[in-house]
Length: 350
Image 1 (spheres, rainbow, N blue to C red):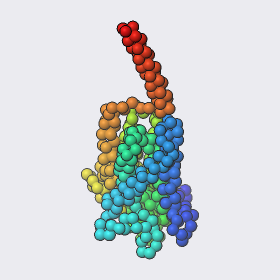
Image 2: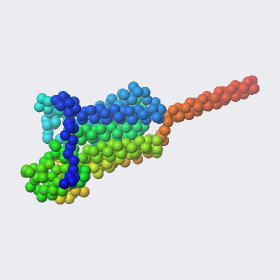
Image 3: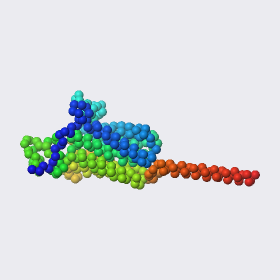
């Protein structure tokens, strides 16, 4: 029988070396920041932006710190259904559970976006850089790094999608098993070629982490990178990236099972089916609601950025500096000529 699914790779474990507190998820975060750093630096060099490597390192340090703070705090406040972090807030940044190292379990993209954006605004203001230019270069740098974050989710076997009987289905070993007595479960198992031998069965799921890694990461990066020298005004790429990511996230959420304990935050038409198999068109998860809010914010950002003074894009700061230098030299030459003319006139008048 031809199976319409693949098994999650058995050799792929969350720990790099079993028994040691080093996880692939953490390594993926390091890889994401490293990739974003080098893509950003490539833009700085390409445009001859007036920023040294020390300046760039400082910018990334504080922005990464604010991103991690925002991502972690937002995750514990929005996605954690129990009140453990409200009762014991020190656990938000405590990487141990029951005497073993677990790392910081739970990060929110939207919280990271808020924290990272604030970090860019504050640090740019302190260094007197054009915030719109800094944000535009970040818009080209973030997506490719984001790909690694979703690969980390995949390695952890978390944030998997809804049940599918299509050829892209994958059985995740830690996915919640489903009651074999349900008619839709039996039908899905039969279509996928999975025998039911007990009261519960694990069905193939959409590998939604990989969907997000591709569309929210690679595709968003390719588009923003191609537009980096074609933006109509400063700040455009930042707003455009927020919209591009949010649209991708919004539609991919239809393939992803809602977070445990949260379900759909808005559900206009209830169909009574399990969330593991059905995502009604008019039911919206927390990720979709936050994506809509992010799109609204991006639209406001685009309008404001398009009307601010000094909005004209600068392709190459070296050319700008050379033009200003020539303009200054011409101005000095003109000034000297005018001063000489005045001296000659005064001599004649004498």
